[in-house]
Length: 259
Image 1 (cartoon, rainbow, N blue to C red):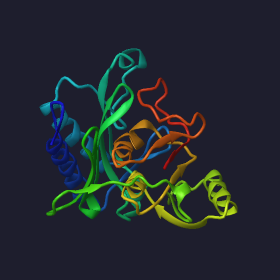
Image 2 (image 1 turned 60 degrees about the vertical axis):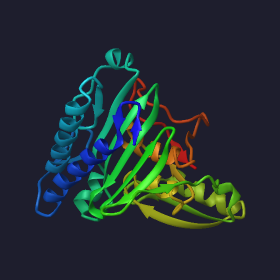
Image 3 (image 1 turned 45 degrees about the horizontal axis):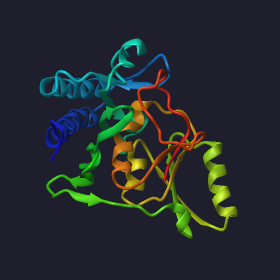
Image 4 (image 1 turned 180 degrees about the vertical axis):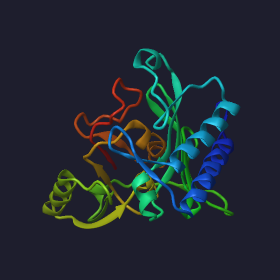
């Protein structure tokens, strides 16, 4: 499976290797550092980042990248990029530290502000999701064939709505969103999950909608955005009602909804 010259199997292999490196550290004690932005950092974040960058530079040396764990390129340079890799070596470091398995490896290819490839690997669950423009979205469990994900039903069409939100970042606004659904006559079930898995749960229909009314960065969402998008869902800027875009001057995302 290819998108232009990008071999999707190569990206899946890189993500799985990064996941294997993470799991080696997950299985033992590890130290936790606190970064300047107060977010946690572990040896696993650094190791996964190294594995991903090694793989991408080896196979696609001409494509630049943005990674959470690498010094950021100035906007004056990256604003000229037509495409680039967007990487989060571990999305859900808090979940990794808690050892609840709900963390992911995220690799996205962004073209003109839009994610055109996204790979989301869940190493503790041996599951990988991928979304590719023009091809679709898929889920693969280790040892099994890929199965296509397709979900075009909007939550507004359903009487019973499953809302997915974060274990670590539940906001007042998300609670208000749920209450508004209820006041509109919907029956609401609440599903809690960590990391970019929330996008994937909406993509495959386990959940119906994911409102995110709290801070995220572009690398937190790019890969899973592609999985949701090419499964038939939309990722919408809550304020403008337009699709979420990437490679902004500020890499901080606005509030958004996956629906």
